[in-house]
Length: 253
Image (cartoon, rainbow, N blue to C red; front, side):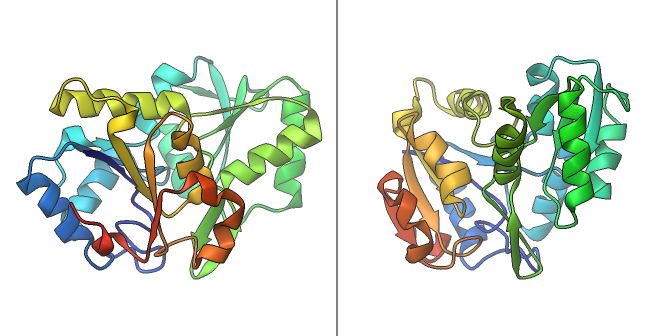
């Protein structure tokens, strides 16, 4: 058995950003038993090294080669010269450090989670798409949980833009197959010969994370410690869920 493990709502809570009950112990057990795993986060607010260090500072003993986020695959996934970012200030600051030209007439718009998007932001996205920009989601989460509230995730915004413009979109992080393929490559550096059928994905995002990887043949476990509060909220995708637990402490390694 091997694992892909989400972070927000799975290992750390969405409000205090502290370890969820049993999360540190779960990672410790995987390390002790030398079970292959990759922590797969849709972090877009900090540089990869900074967010990885944040997890270490919380007490998670995660080897560097067992960590993956969208910034780590962006360069090899997005082949454009100019971009325009939509998201919180932290995301835009990270974009400033990357090797892209920031333009008012971009080749692509990059969208990250934000609770502050308004109708003017959506209007600007639409205009840039009609002007020829590609629609790129840093990930495709269904919901964005912040300060005890739930907002439309990037996945929901991508679907809205597709409906509004008729243009297709591209996803960098979860649940894109390219992202999961990179995570699988990292798993195989720990143990050769693994395929998606050998993977169990643990996440709090039934629609944004688990449905996508289920189509690749992986097993799925939904934790109710984040975006989803009870089983009634995921009845529409329940067939894609192999198991539902309250939190990661209930999963036996």
